Length: 360
Image 1 (cartoon, rainbow, N blue to C red):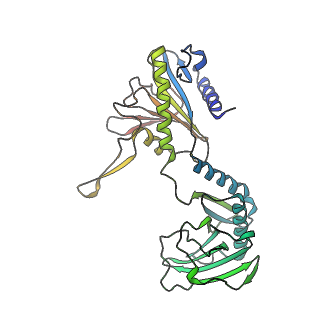
Image 2: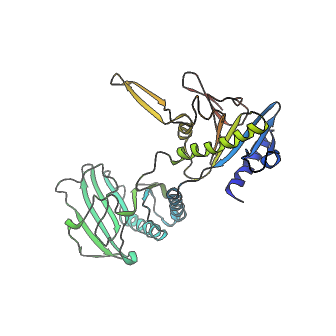
Image 3: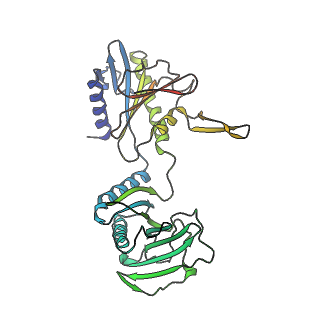
């Protein structure tokens, strides 16, 4: 079963559970080789079109999701309690993840994370690890906020990365370096001058370890170069533009009706409500007035999918995300508004003053 068909069936089941009669696109009698909405929905005297879309993320984000799944799959291999905050780069492999968690286990056996409040521990797989991943370094240095310790597979170029650059390494900080083959310590074979602690891109994996209570837990997995504010916002807008064409085609052939676009998104990258709202009503914008923060105005910008002259045939948008109750946003400028309370959703109804009334 394809993703699209799976979500169509889930949506149809959801509608029928609420008492709607659902006519599928192949039952509508519309002209062949024309765009068609997925469903015509009927309840009493109310009819509306519904077009179903799934969210497909760019390749970089699906790669990030695979990394997250791999970390979570191996999470139980670390027996000592701790919280881990992970950052991955594009060239991270499953082997890197396996070795990183093995190194985490060693560090947790050797280090007391609760011993010093301002001591931060990081585990790293560098950009160019030695063959065999069997040589390691422990680098300790001081920053403006305390000490940091970097535990890393040895880098062929002797380049290592600080996870966060917000706190400067102290001037004349004493940098202590220990090198290991397996668990056996050996002398350092590189100089401090060759050590690069400021190259933020010189790792495949960086993990910050923090004190935990009863077990090891991966708290987050983020991307080294950072994600867009939400890749979903652009995707919502693009998919909605495509859905509008299906709704317009249905209107031309069977009469004008409200049009609803439905999105399904059930993975770790599901957008929050604010991103969904921004897709349709514009990016949130803060405007300072009279030079005072207290006089500022927070509002949705003009780059949303909807406005008074644009995409008015799409009356509402519904968002299914993971296991949460679906969200429905009404189009304030819809030519044919969808009645409030018709669908079992958390509804956002725009008001004339720019705010939203919320109906559970």
